[in-house]
Length: 322
Ligand code: PMV
Image 1: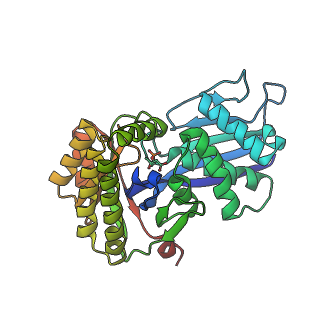
Image 2: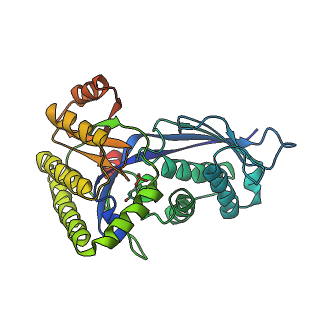
């Protein structure tokens, strides 16, 4: 029986989430955890119409079968249907098994990683080449199912890998950033966020009530993204950390932070982290804390306070490939 395997990493956003939806630049980085997929021919050919998706670690268990009478979360069934539209009816004959090392709904790119890994896995199974362009186009279509009208930063960094500056546009601007040294983070997980789509929509309602005020906040975020890009290139980690703290202040002003997220930031800074901020949509989700060397003490402090936590070390893609 033919079997194919694929992988796509999760991601964190170092600066610029939400502002990126309004066309400002943001900096994002793939992490050393992600979603692994096994693709094989459907085992229950007489059952309901496929493809099927079995997953562990993505915040749901069980088997997803698309179609009106299908089983599993609606959004996943819709994503599988979209995959069939994108890659053809032959996808109905496939079973996907996904194993995720990134918790879902926490702003760590689980839906983008699942999307990219499924596209890679299916193409690999069919023995067909997959250009970066095609991968990004298809992944955006799946991300629209998960997030409505996403800026595109999640699937772009997951597909590209490494550290990038991203700006939404008809033809998105993707600038790889070459870091002079690796970045180490402690990641603390608060509860699930209420969904990226809802957070983005609620923010747009708030922004429409105070357009000038929000415009200034977004411009402030865009300025710090520019500064952070230079600090990353020059290996000035203390400056990167400070800018993360400033970005967190802006995110709080946008009302996307929570008591738990602020608490995680406070714990990390109290343990000597260079900077800490929420990552992704907010309203729950995860905090990333940049550390000079070993993230262990911050991870332990997060855990002692009752949060799930792990560490991750990231390098520029160009460094990884060297
Ligand atoms: O899906 P999340 O939680 O990683 O958030 C993505 C970043 C946002 O800027 C909030 C949304 C977007 O489409 O860029």
